[in-house]
Length: 275
Image (cartoon, rainbow, N blue to C red):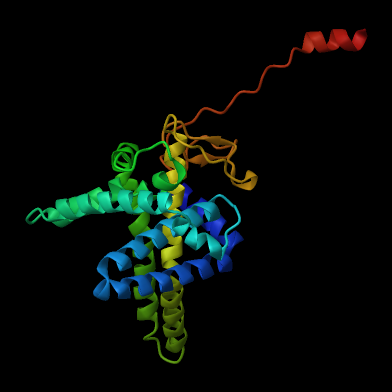
């Protein structure tokens, strides 16, 4: 499933790389401004940060689904008091529980990380599912992420580990006389790319999991993927996309029987031709 998620995220990123990157960068700058207010006016700074990050989650979702994204969408959580109250109440409630679990001696940080992944879908639920109560959004996210927390964690760290290994290997090649400077330059460019696009990639991963999980959740909003993203068939065990000719799932490896086409009644066709 993780490979399938990566594939879809890279495909979405390739379609609107600069627009998504520009909005993501603007969001980071505005969050920094919001964080700076935490020192002077804590409540205002925290509220601005939560509203901006929630709005950015929705932009990531639109980008993943191939929809239009605009800078003005960064401020959609500020439109009216109902949205502001819903976002601040839901995010604040889930953040409080993550903080409480993190206070447990010794194992607190581990439980805090687990709860953070349990509540990963809260921003999407608050904005897309008005029927879900503010205080219930945490429990809804917890139920939907059962069986997915480990996959989300691996999806978050796998690309980071791969990048770090690549940087280390290229750094070692940088010690080669005469041509080593080229590898050092490559290392610098990779670090710059990670700093520029890392948060964007992670945001799209969260959106991808929200869409994929909702596909398998009864009564949850289902998002139609762009036509060029649709697979010929899906694995019945992990839900990964597959080509019609695939026999084994590229994600979990189970055997998937090929779909049989409807048999053609040759006798009836020949009778029609004779008539």
